[in-house]
Image (tube, rainbow, N blue to C red):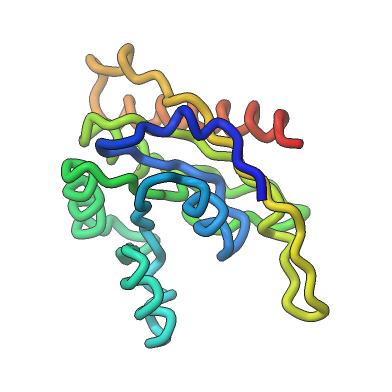
Length: 182
């Protein structure tokens, strides 16, 4: 596994880690190289199986109901950020599939970062969508952490507009980071 750009992640204080989403292994690839604990916003469907729910809760994840405005999950994320945690959120909301364009990102991660007043770090990943359990195949994983996205010029905008602008910046940053992946 290789991780580049870790110097962009603050050593302490709240930060939104906004990664693209390719597989269920993404959380490991973005979380393992960090030198601080990571809290993950995970879809509620993963909590249906007790062993998986236990693993997620033990790892510090919290659930979000997708497809609707889950204010409890948003409030929990903002609370964690104010407490100084690094919180991982996938702006795409669901995994991208091979051969198809990635889903259009939603503005929730940007809204949470803007509301909390914390930096939002884009992360591009490679390799997690090529894991095979049978026959076993473990490809090389790469994560590239980008610079915090600029938000100073968004201060006077309504939250909805600012969040959409920040989400667009995230998309641009991901495209650039992906182009730089080895």
